[in-house]
Image 1 (tube, helix red, strand yellow):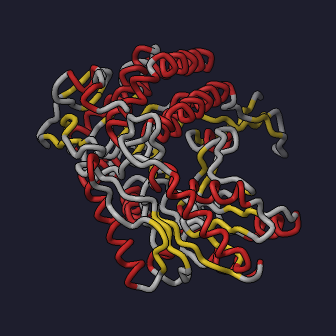
Image 2 (cartoon, helix red, strand yellow):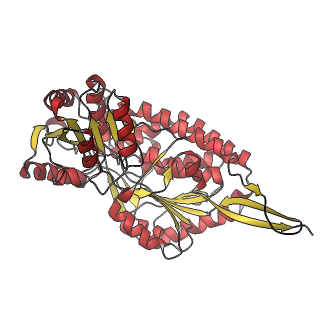
Image 3 (cartoon, rainbow, N blue to C red):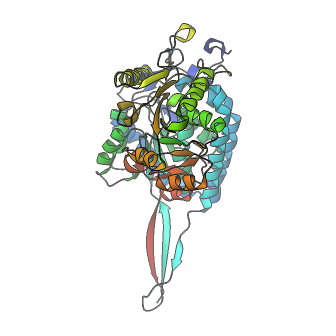
Length: 495
């Protein structure tokens, strides 16, 4: 086991207090002071960050605007592709440092980071291929005379990227990739609980050949720095991942200058297991569809609908799987589940466990904060409730922790009705060997992503998005890239 006291800390954590990263340099906070960021495995302070204000956001947006209209605007698609390819190599080269920062800052186990590496590198390469895909059209017209009509595409301008704490090393690339592929610039506002990998990535982008000011990072609190960015009159687009409540605030703030929006919001995703499913795959698949990243995943399949005829067997096997998982220090390579990100999140999860018990759900595994050697961290057992009804609080509200609600059903129609009885629509899944059942579910589940006999698989060329109160916009694929462009019609009269 590797203890946090035995590691060599990355230079970012030994360089003293961290400021904002604006115009390619470290800049001290203007007036907001500082906030601490903690190691969730120990509860101890890692370092301090700048507490961004409107003045810091103003400076970052001004830098982004200058870069957009200046040197970056003269980069060809081949040169933008070269920056992304170089960044791919730098992420690969510095992976151990980036992964360690992510583990220390938000608690992701090192056992997960190798899979993360492959996904991030693949994502960067995908966006590198898209630099030459910002193409327009020549369209026939009915105008008399010698007029040619064109549709051209151009970068929207300055993008505000507001990302959550549950995986910034990965989630930042859904914004950075689109920005760099299309020629936009951006100001990133990472969550105050996990900002370190975003700051380090900004440094590496300069090393990759990106002009100063193309990517800027302002750290701080959502109601302060995040709100200033969302309402800024010189920001052309906001890409946000977070809660539905905050998404509504961003929609209101965007009205000031009619910003374009991409919103990935909350989820309460259904995971439907039929009696004919391969339980050797469905049990671990559905379990890790919630327990992965300690349940801190927006599309986690937290409502597990199980056909009643196999409910007892399924729950018994799920409990056994939960007991087999090792929870502890994320730097231990044998650990599968790390801590929750903060004391605040731990309190939230434990409160939902209490609510579930009070409302009559059957707690069959977990539900306790872990103690002993890891008592200082924000660790909770993987938790399973059985015989949950779909109207209970734990089945209605997003918990964002390792808490599964098992809900029985009798027919496919009932399963589909229960699955869609939610205000969210981010993800969903079905486990069955019957083609007819699978087809019915994949067409009937109202969500932006549906997995069949798997859970949570994402490819950057395909992507995913939200439905209902899970937001709108698309992450991944050419549709995602289009969101960073606007279209203009050209009428060229050659007479």
